[in-house]
Each structure stands twice: as structure tokens, then as C-alpha cells.
Length: 132
Image (cartoon, rainbow, N blue to C red):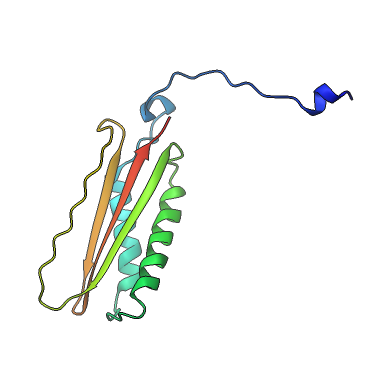
């Protein structure tokens, strides 16, 4: 074997596919399907939970990792995923959550789910941002 074979470089041709639809059915981020998955995860994890300020940050990290890992397995390989989870104590206050993004409305999408019980509320959002 000569040195050239050991250092072989692969050159890939351009596909000229600029959107998720070009990769086939089911590759576009589906907010409805992702919303159902997120809702199931937070309901399973938070059912019967009581608000505890000392564990809130740990719960948020666990939930965001669980959501991200589950959505990654759903086959959205051409998407960057951003997961945002908000957890707070329910004490008669009012809260409004809003977000804004600069994105391609044809390819990018988001899914949100909400959970509350007697002592806490939780909002989870997943943003799927297509990249070429």
C-alpha cells in the first residue's frame, strides 16, 4: 500500500437539495407529532410532582435532555433542535411566555406543550431549525 491509499480523501457532490422535502416523506419537522411526544414526556415525569425550588433546575435539565434525546430519535437528522423548558410555582400569579425567531417558514417549525397541577406549571418548547 502506498501513502496515497492511506490518506484517501472523499469528495462529495452537491445534492442541490435546499429543503427537507427533498429527502423524502417524513423528514420535515412535524409539530403535531413532536407536540404529542413532548406532552407525554412531561406528563409522565411531572404527574404527582410538587414544586420544590431546590430541585427545579435539576428537573428542567432532566426534562430538556429527555425531550431532546427523544426528538433526535424521530429522524429529523437535518434539523438543529433547541429545547426550552420553563418551570415555576403556581401561586396565583400571571405569567406570559413569548418567543421570537428568525427562520424559514417553509422548513422550520416548533412544538409546545404545557402542564400544570395544584403547585406548579411547566411549559416546554422544541424548535426544529432546518440546516443544509
